[in-house]
Length: 427
Image 1 (cartoon, rainbow, N blue to C red):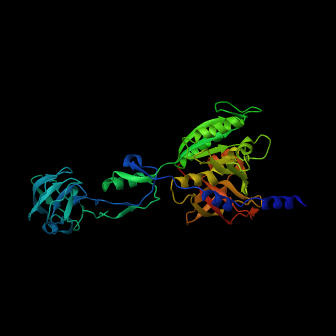
Image 2: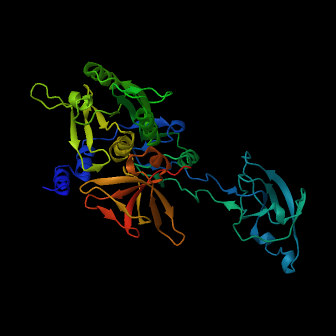
């Protein structure tokens, strides 16, 4: 049997990534809904549809600073067109805090500030700069269109209109919409509490360089940041040695404050892979609480998923290599967080992009490779694979997308069209 045939045979024994993700995500449920004060709702996902109890604007109001008038009284103003200036009596001033109802009479107007209640019978607000800015009387030089500078009650959001559907992310602008229509509380899915644990006797904390037999723990810091970026309340527990009882005790303790636990390291089949050995161990004829699966994924084929503790808190077990751990997070842990949070969709957005460089990929595995995505001037996208492949942290740090190469792809030629997952582009 040739080496290529051996590789293909090994790949055929792996679980397709789509099948694996489907089996895992079907076991998860969104967290129970929670009624939150509006000031705390940002960043959460709505658990119920939200309907406006009141209209916005709540009353007819001025949209600009100027003079509220009747359009028929000023329709002849127009110095630029050879017309005459129109003169009106200013019978009062109205600010945003004015509350007494007032009415216009023919030939009169009110000086108004933006946001002030509109006088009855007013159907236009003349901007200050189109007048001589008079106080007792004002000369108007230009005639705006009827309705200019006026915001009618409910013209933007009438009472009873659907403001947002369940599953919508609560953004700052949506908070403003809720507040403006009189909503003080909303029912949301709480942000999942995610605990991150790095495992391995070789790990040492940050602040020093790696030495033979010692590896700086980059994973727990990176994965905690990734979980926070995904919308979770993320907690880094730190490093756990390869001690069976210590690991069991730590995970049991963390179930009290976690909706999801992420471990990194020890998912393989080597002599030092204690996470897999401990969490998959059969007890009393029953399978262990976590199943480890060889997935057709590159990098990092070995992934674990199950539950721990009496509360059956979900746990995701990712590889120890930093690049493989971050890719594993994107593929498995991030969708799990989104699902727990009630977000839709759970996967990052993707685009089809024009590949700028020929790349090769291991057959039988779905590869996720760091890349830079750019929008083309004429429309569409281009994608440039970053050097070093998927295992390089520097490539992942520079990437704004992940180039996805399917299991049947061994070579993708420059000029071909490929799928790319879009990462957050905040820089």
